[in-house]
Image: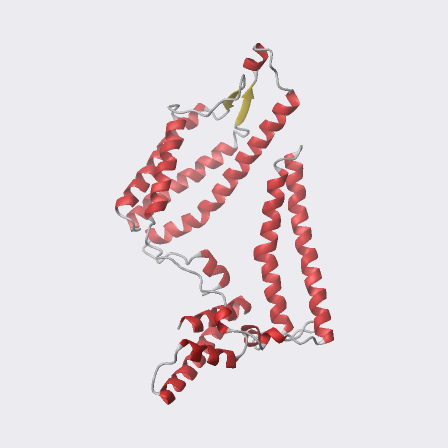
Length: 333
């Protein structure tokens, strides 16, 4: 019963994390018993409209979740359940959006490092202001005893859809093909068979030491081989997970070593000077700083993305079921 699962999933999202499993198990058993009794009475299975009517009779998920929330002094029920929902939206939606937007804009400022630090502080301050504003609004609603009419006039079919959780052992061929193609282009660039267009009279220099040439090439070739393997056998095995785990550990070690050689990007303007076209030193310095900061942030994001992948591959290599999709971990299922 998808409608019942969506109803329980929304209630789970509103419950305290430590009590979710027990409460949802109790509610699920009770609702299934009610539906089974109704089906026995009618001598047939309930259709979707009848299930929706039964869920509406049980009450809006906010009201159901409110029964299991502890009593609060400033904000009572059912306002407190709605208040918790609003705080989660700030935590998982508004704050990340403000943070990403602030960092993206800061990369184009005159002093990117200072601007990024300031944008992070602004995002945190905005989140606190938003939490304070939401708290004041709900305190006022509680004191005025505003009637929440939408808690009565609601439709179970309007509940959020269940998160789609793919088969954790299935490897999409599109991802394998994209990874294979991207690594092939990277290798061709890394060995110098293809290049990037140069600006007139300006040459881009790589400041990465030559000692990193072979480690980067070998790791890229190993992962490209894994993608090719996954194209023909698109499912995870313990050996394949162990192989990717080894490659990822080596890649993380290489990223850490590369950070010790930062900055990695430089511009050679000697050709421009020789031709009588010399860009200003300030413009060159700003461009180098922006590119190097962008590369450093990209490397940091890449390193963070490797952490959940390492945990997944470690479990697969040990023959354990992988962790659930992160959306399901965050919002419950």
